[in-house]
Image (tube, protein in one colour):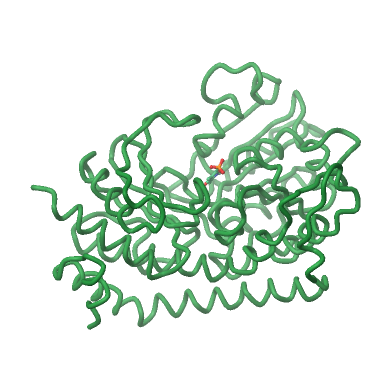
Length: 425
Ligand SMILES: *Cc1c(COP(=O)(O)O)cnc(C)c1O
């Protein structure tokens, strides 16, 4: 067994042995499955590039209004192809995933409309947007949009309850049903593409006029295909689809008519998607998308290794190391605040950037509890890069994700395990 490289990176013999044993086991089945999925996604992306005739001129910057910005237009189309959608809006002017999702919601909804969150309470930073946290005058709820949250049933989308709710709405009422693919900071399972597709079909079966939105954050390229049939899929470019290279931004992909509406909400009514320049150029967005399937595969392998190692140490891992994966997130329930801090310290020690930092909990905007984050990333907050976060609350679960290379993720797992094992019992 090859424990030498980890030993040279400062990992103890005991932990190097533990990690290498886990890795050997994963190489039989779990890792080859990952490579097979990455291959399918990679070829779909290459096909999209080829069909659009992507060439170096598409990487060039524009300034000012950015009228006839070929790079911006080609990037939209290449993302649409990569995600299996008709159209897309891919913009560095989307500030984050939350901003992207908020723009989608405000584009699709008007006062009196109904928003149904069909996968339980949404991700923390969306709560103020919806009006489910705080007392904001600018939330969807304050604007007059009714917001209903349907909790998951035994980890599954409550399709029957959803259909009942939709069927009970007056005809002609505008409805948006939103689904969140990834679990975010919660201990529910993530949803598979198949589960999402079935639920989207179930919506249209009852209300063909309803609109659908999938928060696709952390899910891109984890499965061979993306959710299909939704009006909008939205996500962040500093997560999976940016491949670690996109410096900022978000995307929405889906049906052309909804993407058009979103474009007018992002810019201004009447302007749409035909304005917008980016003086730094589009190269990292194209190149990041190209690399994304391989980066996501590295991240998923690191997540499986993390699950296997901490499972062997007696901690609950979700998903299990060999379970089908629907996103790049791995949670480990560490049970104490000390263990959470030790885990994050270990991940930080493995970083190429900011390795000297010691992560501490802090009050992060948009989150209710203090959050601790280990992130030695090239892109600030880039969570497709190796990172670990935890809200400091029961049951003290840490969320581990990312890894631009598998070897880096492996070192992160080893250092985290070493720090946790070093705690006095
Ligand atoms: C990360 C994330 C968001 C928000 O994205 P930010 O870029 O952090 O604003 C929304 N939903 C889910 C499921 C996420 O994982």
